[in-house]
Amino acid sequence: MRTIYICFPGGKHKVLTMSYDDGREEDRRLVEIFNRYGIKGTFHLNSGIKDPRRIPAEEWKALYQGHEISCHTLTHPTIARCPIPHVALQVLEDRRRLEKIAGYPVRGMSYPNGSYNEEIVRLLPGVGIEYCRVVGDTDDFAMPENYLTWKATCHHNHRLIENGERFCELNKTQYLYMMYVWGHSYEFTQDENWSLIEDFCRMMGGRDDIWYAANIEIVDYMKAAHNLKFTADGDLVYNPGAQSVWIQADNEIMEIPGGKTVEL
Image (cartoon, rainbow, N blue to C red; front, side, top):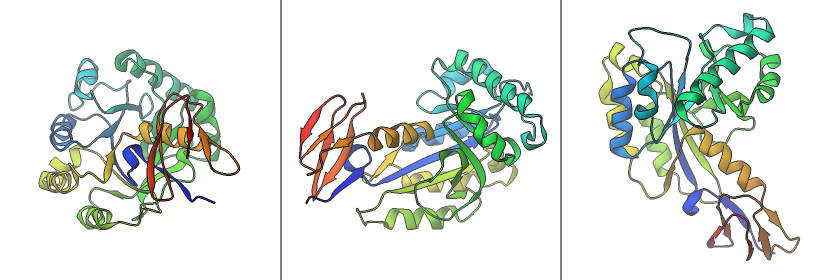
């Protein structure tokens, strides 16, 4: 019997993703750094807040091109204290406004003020949200068990370089590893540590063993991967989706194109 593993695109076994909230003016500098080193991020925005410290909505589509625009609720309330119908409206109206700007379905979110409860978690799929980031740090590189309570590896002020160095050293290809970094771009100005993210991105960028992805790309890819259909003997696999998925069959890396049946 063959040993079959799911891989990330290109047969890779590591993924790096970044997650930043609030759309403050420092996002311009952060996006420039990400773009320079080939890092991809998700930016969680409040479409109902107008503040001179925040980037105007008319800039969002161009600024975040190549990254992901994601929900952060309309006006950033502490939603665990809000009536549940109001939470639904906060998310739906934020989605609606962001989608008109982004030009694609917005399906991700981060909890404003880190606030949520089980009722809100159950609500989110019904209002079109497929993942939502919580606050806190795992100091781990495991894939999440529940994308609606997705906790990052670390905030950028929490052992970022140390965790990055550990991530780069991982080489056991029988596992999938994810490094997920979160924060707020204004904190780099506030803490006078822009060199931290510069050094991190310089260290992590351009590596051929890492897939660089926005949050929703990881969610979509893992759904596609888990939807592959294998024969009982493991000699054939059918990909019913449109997106290619990569696997490792024994020691051979194989691409399984969308809509195709492939002999292993």
